[in-house]
Length: 200
Image (cartoon, rainbow, N blue to C red; front, side, top):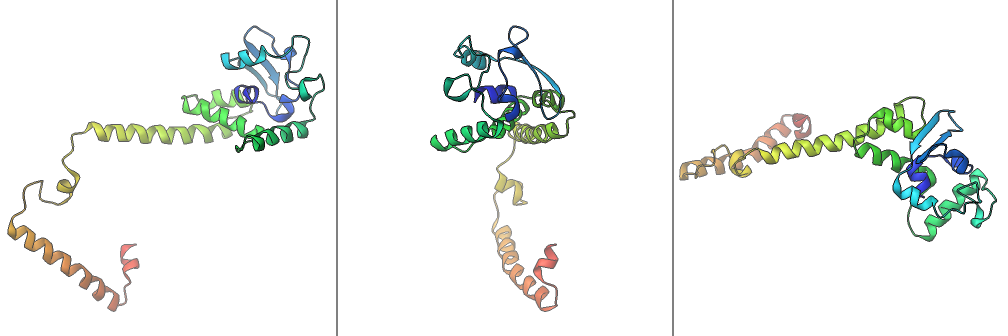
């Protein structure tokens, strides 16, 4: 799981990744099977810790039942899905790839940074993740600005009375207006203009 999440590798790459892909200390390098794009990624501490448990005499990181036998690509995907079912959680290897890209976008990574993680030839797919993350960030930023502005009580701000106490005269006009609105809708409906069209 950590190997897929931290490298963004697809199934066919996970099925054959091993010690031969650690070219430099603390980095993992591979060429994505589908796109032929080279990826050169740092090995995060959580993945480094997990890889320490792989026996030194084993080249592949992911093998069948701790043997030296590699998984076929389809079998690896099915095996992982079965583990998700056992754990009663939704999941797939492709889902981990998407989760890794989302994690980078949420951390503020650029489109090319995400494309490098995914080993894509362009930023088309990466833009989907950054756009979603940026929208959430912009919403947070907008609401933070709203909280920072000193606002009057919303009901007072919207009642057209500027927060001042209402006089009996104000109250009489307000009640009269409320009684008139339903009659206006009846008149509009009788004249052949539906309320829905009016609102549009």
